[in-house]
Length: 131
Length: 131
Image 1 (cartoon, rainbow over the protein chains, first blue to last red):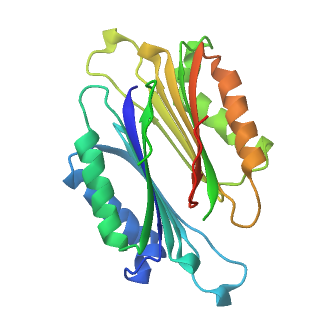
Image 2 (cartoon, one colour; image 1 turned 45 degrees about the vertical axis):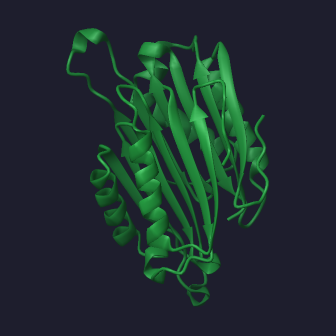
């Protein structure tokens, strides 16, 4: 169960706003990005949040890919230009850290954030590191 | 997008082993636990991992509940008696920290771990705290 959990909280995202509001489009990107870095998807769930007041603009979405190696979760807040990313890979059966880093890097390039707050947590081990 | 992300990595779990291998049972527990603490589920995805060699015993499961407030993810490794828990709540529209703590506490009581490595990460904010 030892593994690496990367988090990144993105603000001031300058990407096409549709990436923060179109769950199917974001989900398809995530599915493809997971495969591109060599991780194995075993399930997926995409959700669009509605608003009682449509005039407030489109609401956020969540895209989750369950991995053989653990999970990817993306939550968006279009009204804030904000996104949170979680890439968690257990290293049971091999070290997937390089794949996790590549997936995280690709997602950050997609959203083009003005600011990133990132953390790196070693799961199931005595030490943890924030970066 | 400010929020609280709790993680806990459990080892030496002394619970009924079925909690680590029965995705439907674990998923139903998670669904109920989320509602009990007053969080709002908007989707769910449960997965059972297979093994090429069945004689190695049952494999782990993943249970994910997407929340209006972010997500709950549970991964199990029955061969190690290990479980990882993620409870992430954004505090958009209210402070859900108490609910997140209650959900995490209930899950830990379910699995009865001999050892817990836990972390508390403040998302979307300058400071983070490990505990």
